Length: 316
Image 1 (cartoon, rainbow, N blue to C red):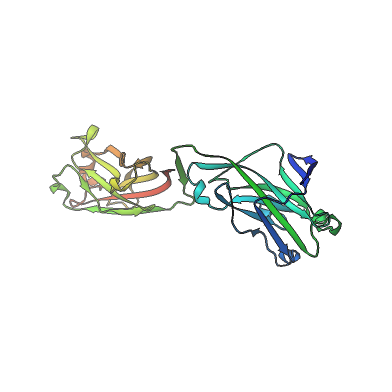
Image 2 (tube, rainbow, N blue to C red):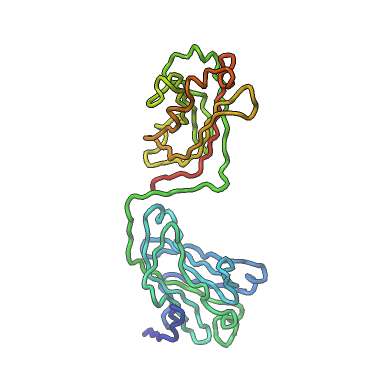
């Protein structure tokens, strides 16, 4: 009959001794010292199944340097089929990690003493122990954990709950986002009779955009101002759950003085249902038509757009 006894509880970690081997998986490592000699930072076991999910053990033979662990073995349990915890799905499980004492033929069992179950999900797919065991204790042959340069590890995993938190969204901000610039030269402006004119499409942040001009004005600018907007070129192609956080500048260039222009700058969450943003009163007819201002020269005006996609929201 298998027996177990609690030995120590420290820093929220319980260590006990058990005669029973781990139920779900065992890993035997021979010539353990070669992991250190060959600078193997971590070793991932093969997948094993428990509670209808696939799992694996991740061993750091000289400590998890990413978490500033020194002089200890680090050992973790990770869910291997990460697709099962994508989006808002999660698996809650209790687990124990094992290390065989080869001298006494029983196991050191390590588990969390304060939290009975852990949540495995897309943002945190592994749990375990940074300081599973001091290297000095592990390497001491009298303790039986490393004998003839061989050790045996194991795991038990019990899934306690599976759940999905329903609908949600994922905002991805873009580091070091780059801007795209598009220049639109509009000739024979005085002949423009349509309500709205579109520039050629251009790409920024993996999305197609266009500039829209209303030469006779729109909304509050109707009959007194030229209206100018940035718009998604194909809003129907944008999923209904997506939003695109964009910073943009629209300019009308003074063609007589380099570097001078009329401009507007804005940030906006573009989407399929809100595909455009800009200014209904971008420039007055009076200012636009005065030759001294250089915006309309020889019946030509030049419009620029500078567009930077800073983040994207999608459904999960």
